[in-house]
Length: 251
Image (cartoon, rainbow, N blue to C red; front, side, top):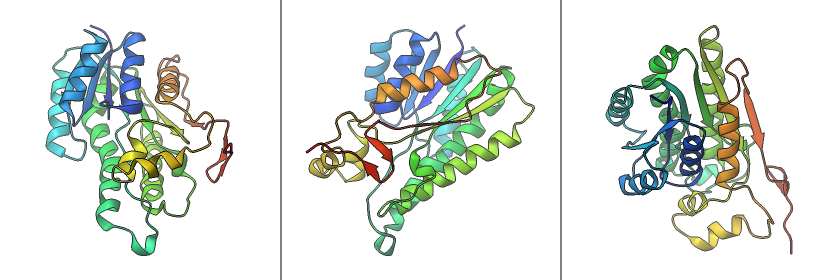
């Protein structure tokens, strides 16, 4: 059977684009996310090279069930893409929502931990495993209003770096992809609670923000290098974004 790639957060955005791209690279893709209806549409589009498995990465039981479904497919599990994540709100620390902070930590950090723990035995057993974690430039740069999200992404990158050290000598490589400004249908919209005007303002005047397909292309490239080649961290921004706080906007 084909090598199996598991992609979390696959119901939209970067996750869906990555699932499509990895299928063209010869993987059998397990598309995982909470929204089963979206997954079914995606798998129907991709065809027999994909399987949909509903999964909530904030639930131990759900992740365990996903791992069982993946191993039940019978093929070698060689790739995990920890893509599920998100941001909530843009409040300053002094009025930050504890619930929002807890959710961001649970989905970005503990979600990556749960998925890694669940699939690491299979990845190691394959003899050529790869874990790609989709972080953010927020993993190493803070900004006003981003305390909860940047804290979660800093923690996620600490998890990735620690894992790389702990797996030294084992046949599993650890890759981190940190995008800057990526325009997808849902990321900013979810962050602002469905406020389309606020979501649109994030990208106002930016000629060409990155797209989900741009990030999927980078993930696929990193995952398909010869296995002795490890791209530890890939930082990618649109040319309009010179730094987290420096974005060129056309009038």
